[in-house]
Image 1 (tube, rainbow, N blue to C red):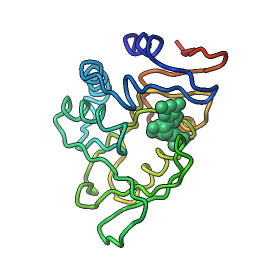
Image 2 (tube, rainbow, N blue to C red):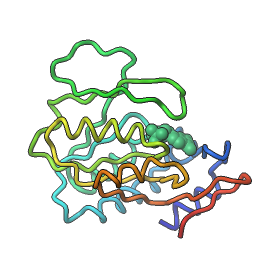
Image 3 (cartoon, rainbow, N blue to C red):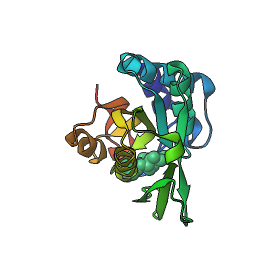
Length: 190
Ligand code: 5GP
């Protein structure tokens, strides 16, 4: 997605060889026009797949997942992050380490909002090692719903997360793929 690459080059901040800060676009401020464009692109790629729900993890995935769900005309459900889980017989939960915060959180999705006959599109902001995504994939599998695909705004290809999801046979659709953050520079895979 060329417009997204341009914005990342203009506004992204390479914090280290591992971390790209995208606070102006994704992780703090949200650009509604650009977000709608990302949602349209995900919707275009999954339009023929009979998606019945979009799911994401709070909080940075919500805006783009909302845009995607709006375009597809289906509900958006976001998994919630909880520090402690009260026993909830209705909740599907997984413990995941957080890449940026260095802590472990539980992500939770109520069975009320995901059903065995659902065809799920999972959307997220950035994939690094894939812990968050693998947690979400497990929750979707345990719900009995079909996971049709995973749309991610930024795939950092030098970390193994997206590859590990592909190896599970899941269709992964990144909007941009970054091969390196070396020398303070963002390099994309064309
Ligand atoms: P993973 O579980 O794949 O290791 O990390 C995924 C989550 O960590 C993403 O949802 C994202 O919020 C955060 N994250 C991972 N890498 C980066 C990064 O380079 N920059 C930012 N801003 N967030 C990241």
